[in-house]
Image 1: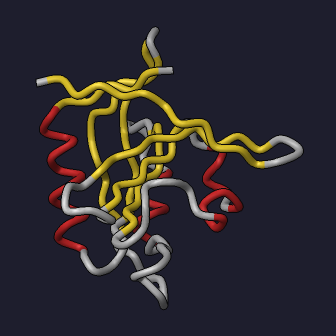
Image 2 (image 1 turned 30 degrees about the horizontal axis):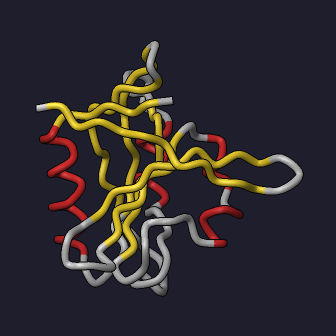
Length: 138
């Protein structure tokens, strides 16, 4: 499975996440299914209302429900940032109910250069993440 996105979306993910530092940013990725996988088109930012926003995210319920039940938008993934850790799913990410979405996006600010990783998280007898490839189009 391949994920494609425009450079503008990639830059929006970085800018939004950077703006939310030192807290984790979060939201949904909208897009469409394609023969290669998914074409990501848009970020829907959602406020993080976690009591510990530097280490976890909890989407603001009314904003989350509005995005989830919008009939004209297809959610292809969940997005959040890791301000101080690498871009791999945490134990909390792996145990969340978001594994039902096809993709899980993590923007890491562990190093000077932001780094995006995208995963497919599958629940079977054991929860396992599989890193996905992505392309950025101009």
